[in-house]
Amino acid sequence: KAQREKQKKRGVADAGLRGAVTGGAQMDGFIDLFTKIIVDADMDEGYIFRKRQLELPGFFRPTKEWDLVVVKDGHFITAVEAKSQVGPSFGNNFNNRTEEAMGSALDLWTAFREGAFNGGVQPFLGYFFMLDDCDASNRPVRVREPHFKVFQEFVGASYMKRYELFCRKLVLERHYTSASFITSDSETGLLGSYKEPASDLSFLIFAKSLISHVGAFI
Image 1 (spheres, rainbow, N blue to C red):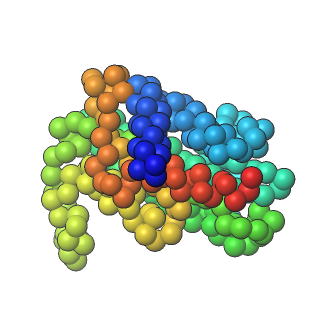
Image 2: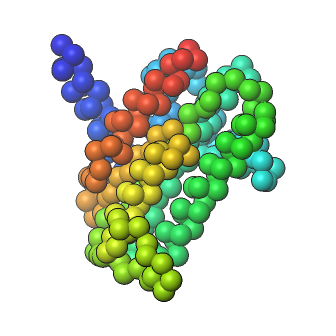
């Protein structure tokens, strides 16, 4: 029975993700999916903000607008950032995306420490990323080391591998509670096809972590 239930949950998550992927680089479908997951966990939709009132206080800046926010009775429960990148140019965009994600997390957690959210339980901070699966994102990228050696995992790593490492390290270093990393190409993506390069960054694990956290506030 437990195995059947597990397969059922995986099937539901897969179907929902395939539907969202058809929207391509537009993130609205994924935000809709996250909203459905939270509502299905018995959170009243009135506490979920997805198109307006998305600003949360920062420490280094007044506010930051997130893609999805859950606030119930004055308790900050969840904030999710959903991003994508399409080819063929990845270099500068990779740096921008990584710096933005790290900066947003630092800003929010510092604001949390300083009491911006009325204390309480730590919120769920989620990061979702979809990358264009193309030749340019799979190609090994040379790193420049004029003074010191880079960490070995970056040597010859493609942009796809770099994003995988980045998402994993965001969680390992506790900048985000959970992260999900998927890839999709411009052709089969329109049919809902996607890949998950790393099992620890799967959408199912991300969704389960989100549901578990939200459940504490039902």
